[in-house]
Image 1 (cartoon, rainbow, N blue to C red):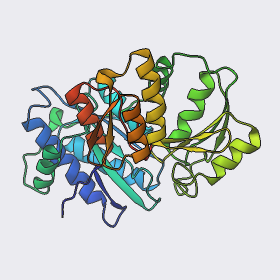
Image 2: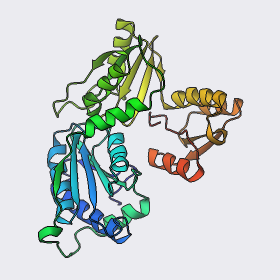
Image 3: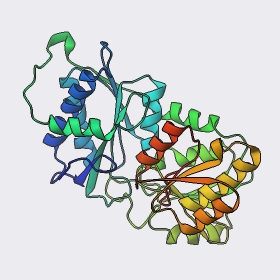
Length: 330
């Protein structure tokens, strides 16, 4: 059975996903990426982050140990959303990134996903190469060739600044309730929405290391719906543990999932002439109603396998600019 799934390596932390495995994965990744030319003869640099799970601490330390022992300089960015790691890899011209997270899964689980230079997830073939190299003998670097560790204290603020730069309209007067799933969004989302001008009520935004995704977040919407109605908010936003997906709640409590969000964006972008090739990328799980809605306005749909990585690959290969999944990856 393959170790890598559609979103990296996952399992119960300290049972399936051990410190020893994390070290081996980091070393194998450094070797494979080095051999395929990802480091281009220079001293490699990695960005490493995690979500708020307590087990992320020992797994992050193991990843850092493996990478530095293989000669990779590591920039530790702490608890940040998965998209932040992808952004920081590109922004800092790093050679790879690693995110320790099991996304929307329960707290005992954790995972490790790798990002290539530029911030894209690794191709399946590269992941297979990494898996095949686990535990092999290798020449260990010594002296100046051992990797170094840097605490990147400004990473969060740089990411927040980037997010704010993408907002084209002020959110003044908008009442927002955001469910942070007691995860990585807790450290970013309320701050971003407030700085954009919204009046923000944050719920499930107090991570303890043990309460991530516990009856909250994008897979548990009841509390958010209740808060939106109780506060008279204009919109509710639910993230998952690593904040790489969102589900919206309308003012009346209606759930707006990923397909619904794509529908809204596709209609808007089509009217503005911004929808590349008049096409949206979905998956084989895309809602039939969404598909028919797109057909009714003349928008084509490309379907991929389930997994946001496959959606993104299709978008990049075909120069599309809008895609996502029903689960809230957009």
